[in-house]
Amino acid sequence: MFGIVVVGIGIAGSVRIRDLLNPLPSSPAECLKLVGFVSRRTLGDVQHVNQISLQEALDNKEVHAAVISTDNKNHEESIRSFLEAGKHVLVEYPMALSSKAAHKLWEMVEQKGKVLHVEHIELLTEEYKQLKKEVEGKELVKGTLHFTGGPLDEERSGFPAFSGIARLTWLVDLFGDLTVTSAMREEQKEKNYSRMTVQFQTANKRPLTWIEERAPGMKRNKSINFCFKSGCLESLPKGPRAEVGLFMQDLILFAKKLLGQVSKEELAAEKRRILHCLDLADEIQAQCEQTRQIDS
Image (tube, rainbow, N blue to C red; front, side, top):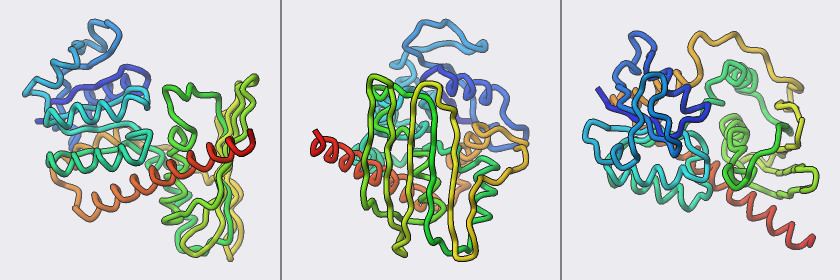
């Protein structure tokens, strides 16, 4: 059994506690034992699970791993603290708000011989699995992925290229390594409006566009327009309803890694994809900030 703590009790953290208390029967998640949770707020207990201090979680030898469900800005520090204490880590995306920090954390993972699992449940949705099937084997001509949603507190969530890394991960997972050719951001601060537009090139020099747009009252939605030599895909395919929840699927993946049930090749490919996406996010932020300075 692996003793585990949940750090951060927002929506995701509460779901993590629920899933740890009720693991899928006969799944690797049954090897995870919830020891307690950590929160900045004084909550006493949640779902009959005791609150413990961060220091207790770091020092307790019965705690072998931590699930980090805090604000994005705190991910880097939390990962580092638990790795330094010799614990395995599951963290919500993005693992850090700079690629430099992410690369350093992976170096620490390798030095410590621990598991770092970065949650990317967007790759586990039935919608995405169906999309990947439809894209597979087709030759891209051009494509666009446009996301809309409500505003975020960037102080807590990070620049849109990082807070929106789930969409970037979709594009990299579907079309391979990308190169940023241009990136710009339009902001209307009095309206709390933001639109980031990024142009990429695939390894085959095909153009891809990613738009991340947020404003109050804007409906959360993803739209696509992927054109291939064989025709265009203009809407997301409908997938069947998943029998197992996304966070439970993710927990099972983490447990498999702890149990040594994931190959070195799979782990290396996943690490490479995560770091490539964070490298791209850094480049996007730099280009957007450079464009803003020129415009001002």
